[in-house]
Length: 314
Ligand code: RIB
Ligand code: CA
Image (cartoon, rainbow, N blue to C red; front, side, top):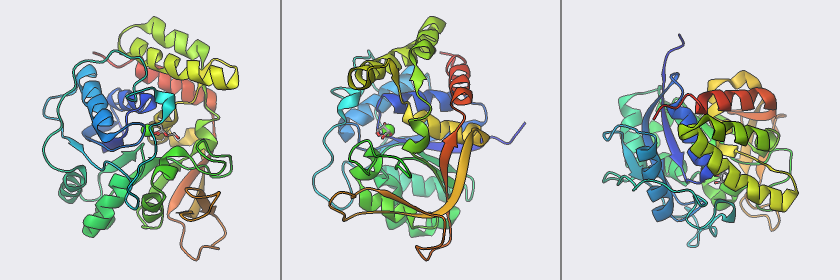
């Protein structure tokens, strides 16, 4: 049995964040030691209430550390408008339990304390903008060498963006933070749109989840909400479940194709602000410190996701 990996989920729920969290909870290889939130798909108040409701829904222990983080990007006053794909409030039309309240103390400070206590062990699953992760490195620089690794859902390496022609939502929401993390030298696994868009969840997948009952059925309802929007925009009943692929990258990295690269994020281009820059030829003058997923076995991902979501007991 592979050793159990302590993980923190840093998120902006968000319907696909919810599916990612459920997959973590369903995976015995992962030990969820905390959840932190930030603004992204919705305001910090909404993403934190959504996360608090999901902790209740998933039956997580009351003593699980749960902290709120940044309410907006590092370098700008205004944050991105809410992500309409997730509906007003960020969780579509899904009925959720009353939310659990976060604990006192900023997410960044709790993350630093936790990483110092467990040097080299903790994986951060970063599935929103990178403001909290950058804040951790800026305010607590001593922890950079103590972080196990960071798995990031974000960026568009060799495909179009989903917010602008070149930028993906999480990186566009806080390009300065994304760049700081990209250039920090902390070991990163980047799960970009290149793979999340190639592993669409189909209408049949959604129907199978809904037929399974329990938490799986509720996750199916969340995906059905995303799929209705996707169908309006693209004409097929399917959806991308971006954040769940960051968890899949931890559970079965071999289902993706990885390129080792030096990366950075454009922060000033008129048309390219937020763009992920992937350099596999040493042209950025830095050693590769990121593994970027550029290919995926989509069927294998869908099977993994179904198996884990139907194993969530609560
Ligand atoms: O671009 C996809 C990302 O933006 C996901 O994390 C989704 O939750 C939204 O935040
Ligand atoms: Ca997210």
